[in-house]
Amino acid sequence: MFQAPYPPYDPTDKSGFSYDTVVKRWPIILTTIIDHVHRLLHDMTIEAQHARNSDASKADELSKKVTEGQEVISQISGLKYRMARDHELDDIPQDGDILVAEYNADLESLKQSSLNTWFKAPWLYAEYRLIRAYFNQKTSWRGFDPFSAQKEEMFKNSGAAIYQIATTMHELESEKAKLQGDPDKLEVLFKELIQMCLWLDLSLLTHLSPSDIEHLQTVGKEAQEARTEFILKDDQGAVWSYIKTLANQGKRLDFLFTDFVFADFWSLIPHTSLKSCFSTPKLFPWFVSDVTPTDFAKTISSLLSATFFPPNSTTSPDSVAHLQQMVTRWQNYIDKGIFTLATDVNNGQKMTEFWNGPWPYWNMNELAPELGQWLSGSGLVIFKVSPLAGSFPLLSLRTNKADVAVGIDEKVAEDLDNRGENWRVSGKYALVSFLAGKKQ
Image 1 (tube, rainbow, N blue to C red):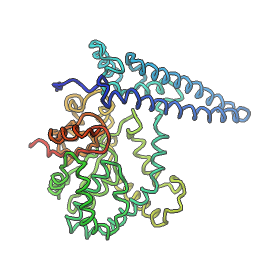
Image 2: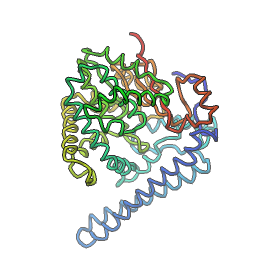
Image 3: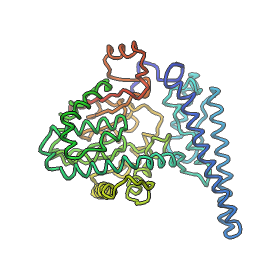
Image 4: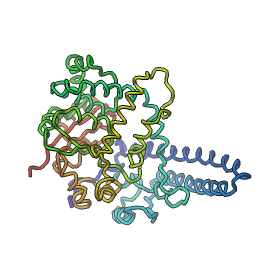
């Protein structure tokens, strides 16, 4: 397997993002989990008290869950303590879940090199699944997603923008025939979607009526060009040219992140008949940003629920109807196999285990050959990191939030460094990298 000619990224550099993560970010994440579980235990305790006289069995079950939850809180608190003091990384206990032995073998290798403490371990191994094991070992908590409440809260707080995007997609759908006859307009829209994905700026798509689309080709296009100052590697034009070559080939698009709006856009491109597969659900989450198969399903059901978003006096009945239409269309795509989750394809569950493993992505073909072969059959793989260049047609969308940055001209990097900008980690800058893949 490939061995990188340079040492792995780790927290030993105190000026780097990895060090800051161990000192600040991870403790905050752990504290947030503790607070969430504590609130759940408070509610369960009250519920058990109320059930004591009417349903003793339920009360006992809740009491057991409270006791086990307190034990989990104690374990996470201990992990937080050990992390701050640079203790050794614990082995993953046998919790009945996947890849325990494989993970522990790699942790043992780190131990042999004295690189198995929180401030010395390669970042790839330190972001690991011990928290999952804490919950899995408790009968009442097995399979619990400690980030679900955070994900749902963030989702609900995006309601206004989601309604507006639904109206935008309604307008685009109604103008479909006209758009398909004007590739210049489609290219402008494509770049808006790219930049929305980079910065998660939903406002880039929230006011696109037919007249706004015309506006995008003038003032809007200039705004796009202004934003390219912050795209340090910009292959937007190259990937759009490539996408146009996929017409009538019946190719599949693989999204290695869940973005229904971006996937929906492809129906506007004439003669493509592209199917979209969301190929990187994690079978269980490590952090709040990880999408699981459960999250995928809940996205559709939540958006179809009339009561999911808090009431908002500024949301129009038309926007509510447009959201229902858009999400019903997505559900129809799922039913017809136009949108697919990788875990639902043949051998998909086994293929996607790789994303929960402790390995660098460049070893995919050796360690997960079925997954590598699956992605090699894609017309285009859209990813938010870029470790797989050359393996298959790849569009990498990456906002700079860690020290490692690939494909930037040295002079550009030197200029940003000389200006004293924290450009590698601030999230202000981004990379749009495209490679058509190996020629067959």
